[in-house]
Image (cartoon, rainbow, N blue to C red; front, side, top):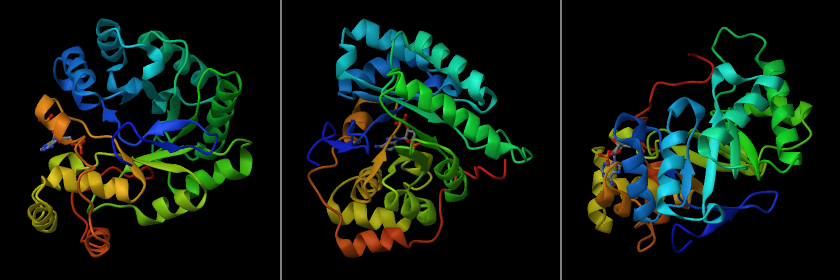
Length: 280
Ligand code: A2P
């Protein structure tokens, strides 16, 4: 990879940019302005979700930018209360309308279960996935996948679905690398993505990450994002500032050595959000 426009190839041949922009945080500020800035900064891959409340702002910013739909990679997710066969199709349609588009590049199940008490999650996931498969077969979405799914959740779909998930997006950063899930997905050809690739800033003052930032002459944020890339995990950083958006794209002029990658792989747990899909 030599720039954020270089792509990983999903199992169905769809090309996905190796760095995206996470729009979750944008809901806290003037969202359309922030997303417009992200477009100006050069981002073309935008990760949103019905839960984030940013789909309309993303549509507005794109409309005002004049950038053609075909130049963009748009991903969204249905929320935990939108799971189920009919519900998923309706949720997808609402996302299309809010995004002012007639197709998505990627659609994900946001969480594998509505809450920890939901004992019927396996059937719910199967029904939800069947709707996703039909949206994919109908050409309304170019790729389908998962978010926050652990191997036990993915196995259920492997055994009961007909289309293998193409993507899984999880919390991933130095200090919380979810090794079992990453290994499982990479062995099964599921493209991994990182939400909160810098642990929502919780990792940026870590002593090891700071030491490596000094060694490579970059910021601690760049160490976190480059770490994800070298693990073949697509980072989806959020930022509200042009300068930091640009910095978060500057990931291709240095490489973390194998020894330092091992140190990041094995550092003590830090910066975990506290969110676990089976323990809400
Ligand atoms: P800001 O919007 O002020 O840039 P994550 O993507 O891991 O959830 O982290 C998002 C948080 O990290 C935001 O609070 C964002 O703040 C901050 N952030 C993003 N990029 C950088 C950077 N390059 N340096 C420092 N903080 C950053």
